[in-house]
Image 1 (cartoon, rainbow, N blue to C red):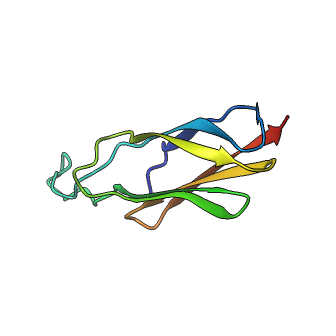
Image 2: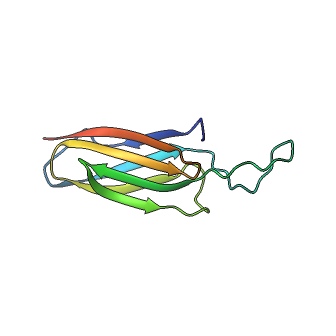
Length: 109
């Protein structure tokens, strides 16, 4: 588990019903390929983010499967249509079994 993994998301505080908003999500994560060795010559275990999801009020907005070539600190920017007020839930899945989550509310004006 990457102890220093830190999710960060940017969601507008409010939107009009039916409006499309831009969401930005980034997770600070070192990413290890499983091919490097530490100072003692031991293999550093693989640890990469392999999946990212975003849901709004329990309905999936985006679900991305990531491949091993993904960069350190994966960043996503995408649009979502907001039908009603609620909460965006963001989830990142790590190869080592760790799950990182964040959530942000959005109101409808």
